[in-house]
Image 1 (cartoon, rainbow, N blue to C red):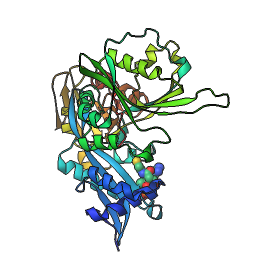
Image 2: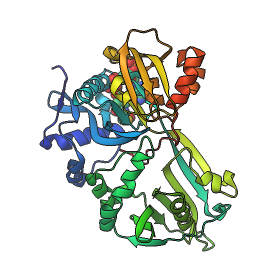
Image 3: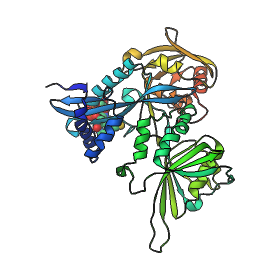
Image 4: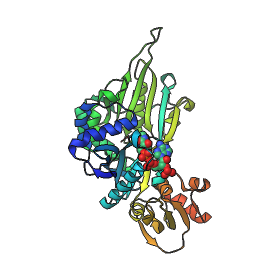
Length: 406
Ligand SMILES: CC(C)(COP(=O)(O)OP(=O)(O)OC[C@H]1O[C@@H](n2cnc3c(N)ncnc32)[C@H](O)[C@@H]1OP(=O)(O)O)[C@@H](O)C(=O)NCCC(=O)NCCS
């Protein structure tokens, strides 16, 4: 019987989830199903079905993501899996084709994902658009050169209050950082529910706000794990899950709060920015260990809408040739006219000045990966002046940042 790609009915969610857990090598917990259903968009999740069995999955969460100069609807691709019994016979390829078609029909101009392996998605037109930094700080060296004297106050709040008052702070970041996803309410519920399966031996969440004059300027969500060595010396750990701040004072104050936690020898913070200001505040910056890896991967689905949907660091006009071998209809030359305040993009038959693959367009789209870097890598070609213009135009003021795994 030929394989079918289709959406699933609610009573197939368990089979869909079991396929994913087997593919990733994770335990399946039946009590997680009810919570999964709250986030699950049944019209956006595809299964590859062999007879009566689900053997492949590919899902989407509908997000709004920050891009340079704005916020755009974005397909957050997730739950991509093929059972080991059915691998390397084109099921992922079929799922990707059907999924991108669905994204295009829905009018979203970009898709974004986190990948389990950096070798998988380039062939489907995704490019590496941001970096994630895992920070590790031995607390004994957690000293900043010019500590601030916080004018505000710290307040410990419970999860219920967090879900009520923190979304506004979180969502404001999408206006400032390309790659930042606004967090829908169902996702906040998940954060607050804080399933023990995801704690890795740490405590449940602590939420602490930093407030000035009653207004929230930032917050930290963290966990701790207490331990003692053979000499009864404290060797506790702190894991900073989120540290979100609306201004520099809140940023510094919240890190100082974290460094002030007692009985701790190591602080870790995953999903930090590649241009983390803390590094430049440290008295001994080498003591802040940074493990940098690929972050968000971006797939441009509608070139005209995506390029017109962001803003550019300087005024410019470029004829860009885009090659899309996975969705060939998108291949062609596009004239982009853009600047800090507006942008337009149309297909054109003028001679191209710069050429790149759709994956490389995705890589430079958020302004994190530079056009000049990809040109030097031999991936983007063109006239020297046009490449330099493209390099300037696509840069953004802050590094793209997506502190949320989905
Ligand atoms: C990754 C995965 C979904 C691939 O599924 P699949 O159905 O075997 O993929 P396909 O047969 O469609 O392969 C398409 C191409 O990608 C390549 N490919 C597939 N998985 C790859 C991997 N992990 N690394 C490198 N290349 C890979 C194939 O070799 C094939 O290349 P080709 O077109 O040159 O022949 C599957 O191996 C899996 O479920 N892995 C574990 C879960 C996982 O990592 N999911 C991705 C989450 S982001």
